[in-house]
Length: 573
Image (cartoon, rainbow, N blue to C red; front, side):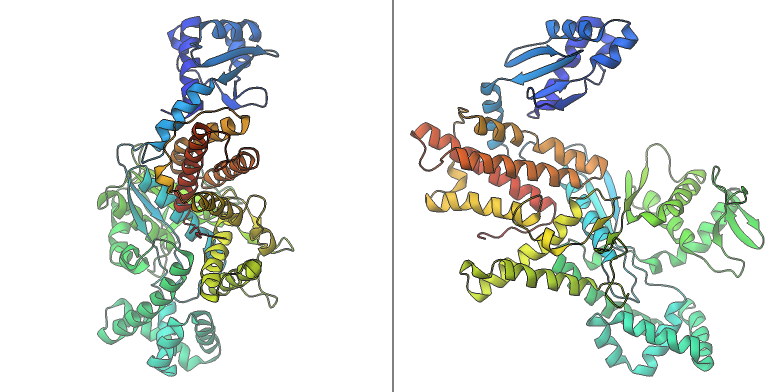
């Protein structure tokens, strides 16, 4: 255990037990970073009320009982406990971290975790709204894999439904070759809109489209062939976007609406026979307790419409049942827009009523906030259309290339660095914000080389690499020992010790922004170290070896952290 907060929490809990009885060893000691010491324990104020003693008296009793080896303890204010770790302890823990391939990240007993993310509509192009669901979900998948979980990625494509009657008929009118070429090129929105206009304005086309739907649902071979081609060429476009973004989704991860279609009737039958679903005004509905409409009447979750059709709720319930019974999940994360919150609350409640979800199986909606324009409204083009994701990413690369244009790279190197910086900037700007918050999309802020940005962290790694390059030293050969003489050395080493707990928290709490904040703080600590502590020109060899070891450890943590965020790092910037 190298995380100082966890070590100190354990010591304070032991002291609480020694001072006030074993029942207090599970008390949360509320360890927080402090400007007056390394950390501060803030337990005394709340505990004092229960013990009916003065907070300062409670803090003093714990201070007297705590193990003070490698630790200085001081009671301050009304009852705060200031905790300062010894330099020797920090140095020893940093050396242990240096020798640890996992950099302090715990590997737990594996759980099976489904991460449902991205989920574009196969009939349309990916737009800026898909950015967050895709990269937040991908980071959570990476984090869970890194702590030892078995991760099942699920890309819930919108690849089924009555709209495909219209789309297949338009495909036949336009011609297969031209349609498939347009779909592979990402022209799905225009194709869909053309079909929609014909459907709304041409009664004959509308009738053909309606007749095509039962052919598709009934498995007509030629209709299925056309549908499969439509999906196949759309997937090629999606894969190009995923490759640009550097996410880990593949065709093997696709579990679209069409996969669950054969299960829908059985799901409805099971829910009805179990008494979970009931008929209401011709539709089959579940009425989860606690959900009411504006009229204060129970709110229905419709799982079979009065015309016999199925909706999103049915498909989502089928997915839960499949994931529980067939995939044997322990936890399912649905990385979907915050606007779907009520839908998922009701779906999860219905699944609990059915007995599919229970205390041993968690289903969680990871709510994704909106991306806004500079006007504070939904991010759109000037004409009011959704911003195409490919165009957004290409613009990020072009802008990044302008940022590094004067750095003397040849055209190929400049383009590659620009790709890594531009895509990294977009992803980091998104991930550094709490996933359920909105944020304003701003290229200038994203691509800045200062502040909490992707390029700042990439530049920090490039700076460390330049130290080893200039010294003709391999980072792996820098093994210490670590000596902490300067405050900047100590601050950097202390920051490094927290990496493992942060990665674990990202997975447990589904909050990638915690890792972003940690890496930014680490990069700032390294910048202060770099400016205050000469590395290659240190005053003596032992100090030089120590600073090289701290630099190498920082490089490894930054690279590992950015990799978990799905951000590539240039060798030079």
